[in-house]
Amino acid sequence: MNPATTATPSDCAAQCVLHSRRRFLSQALMASVGAVLLEACGDGQIGLTGPGGGDLDAAVLVTLAEYPALATVGGIARVTTGSSRRPIAVVRTAVDTYVAVSMVCAHQGYRPIEIVGAGFICPNHGAEYSATGQWTGGQSAGNLRQYAVAFDAVAGTLTIS
Image (cartoon, rainbow, N blue to C red; front, top):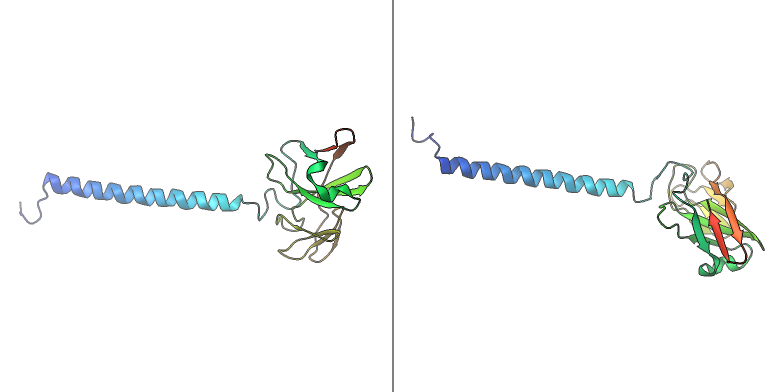
């Protein structure tokens, strides 16, 4: 054997450790990048369930006193949806009538769209909607998804499902 090419056991161990570290660091980096990308995809900016928003995970209970904008007819408020990651807006359309709409753009699923004046607009591409979720202009899109609303005047709450 040529002494210049003969590896000692300690040289092999050092190389194995070096390769193991490289493999570990490489795999850890890939896992980190994957986690970042996965989180970015689920951050709510582009389509959770595609255009329209989709069903809620569970009914949402809204305490009206927590949303001052809903004290008057015509008021619009984005409500907290608990465990659901779907943004919802509630609009008071009459003294005892409310409408709940998805704040996910019906065009390409951008969320959340913005409350502007007496309606909504998608800042991503300009689709415009009335307070009740009807498409009114801008980028061609369908209507916003509406959810069923049950008003409990005694409790001062809404149940959105």
